[in-house]
Length: 188
Length: 147
Image (cartoon, rainbow over all chains, first blue to last red; front, top):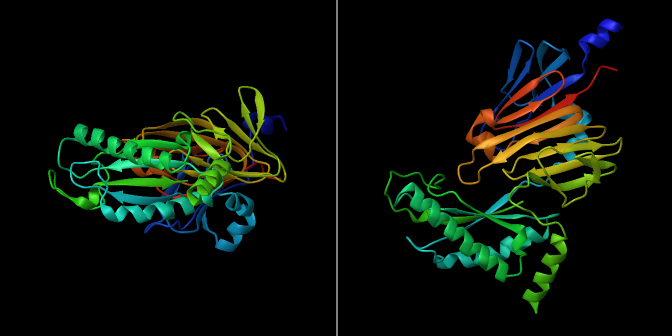
């Protein structure tokens, strides 16, 4: 008994599961206990730790996962959703087709509990990285101001400038690409 | 008139809690007994409540909580669970930072976000028996002593 207390959590009921996810690949999860590491890289691959330092792999199923993790899965927040507005080159003027996006945006906001809006500016690769960081932030602020005018509380909106780091269409440097001059409105 | 109505609906939907850039995340779902322990105080873990680095989320036998973090990581815990938010740093321009949490007991579901996508080593989850490394993924954790 004293030995058990000394070693702490002597026998464990630990269970780790990699889910399929929504992306093209499930990614990977490494489970390390003491000197042992087990990598989970297939959907429903699982690992058990029955005592510290001992990791064993196995396969689980959607049904078993529902049984063990049902309430935690049911409590998952809704996945964030993004809307995109496009800009004319080197300006913070909207491309005309962007206006319809706004009504979809409002519908999304209305059906979420405690909604937050993150306005993220993106640029193409014309200009330097610092220039594009500033331009992308300016575009994001411009959209934020429009959303505030439409009735969304300013304090609920945060802004970010991603510059040229996250192109929709990858290009070489200094290439003008209208699809990359955009503002993303992420609702979560 | 219609736009005024939409504006009013939004104000109601947004409630009272206001987000600030330094917050780590916000509670989006809450059921049963669920609390935030912060600096020795216990606060109800209600929808809209902000979560800070250093907070500990605690649920009772009927409780669950779901949080969306600033990097869009989605984290939820089931009943009889204790989750400590040890560290949360997120740069919204570079997506660099760190997200470290510890599940002391209970069940946890995670959809990793922008931090893990930018650099896999930035997200770590610990349990009393193991440490997890996360490469852009969705996963589940249960930890506790064997009955």
